[in-house]
Image (cartoon, rainbow, N blue to C red; front, side):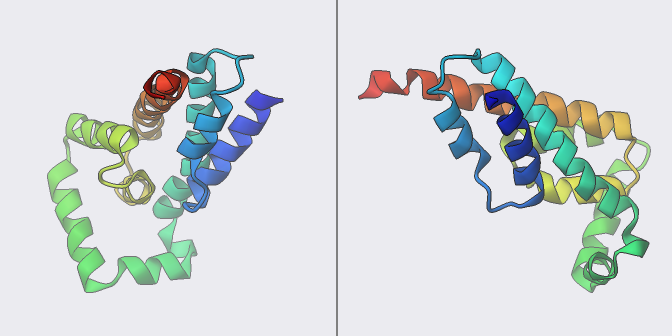
Length: 152
């Protein structure tokens, strides 16, 4: 049951930014039923499942009027032009940016999910870098929570 709830909470938190997944994982770490590596993997899969909605929203901006209006603002258009110039023909660079975003959250992974969709980043690159970055982020959170009692 914990794995299923972790998956769905992770997917929900990928769509709704106010859901604090790391806090959920700290609480989940108190349950010794599953190893932290498995919980981290389930959370990463859930997150990428949810982030795919943002990726596809970015890829299909013409169908979402509110997102299209936001991306057509002068500031957003200039930012998208900069991203396009930086990443055009450089999948390794974009992969590294996505990996850093998925792991560290800078730039925010939710924003980068939309940007990846708008820039038509290959789906396999988005999924693989997102899974790796999110997995290590969540695994570190879970391991830190397991050993936090040492600080008390």
